[in-house]
Length: 100
Image (cartoon, rainbow, N blue to C red; front, top):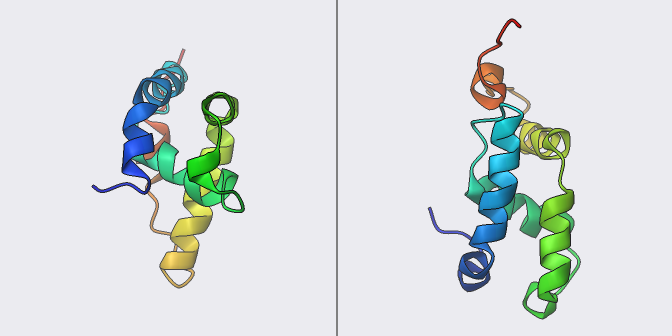
């Protein structure tokens, strides 16, 4: 998968990986680094010149993302791209339900 702003993506991949590990701790295992990056580019920084963002702002934005923000974005994007048909497998997004 090609990602927008690929050079910057590779520069901050350790930050994305760290956030992804945090999501996995909360059992959001289906989220990928690419989804996280595209969310930042398309939603968080849509009105900014991304090439001019300071590294600390990029890191702060990534670390501040919550799973619910990202999942809401993915759901809305799916609804818009499929003419209103929800084709998201919630178990795939959230992982299997574990009884404690």
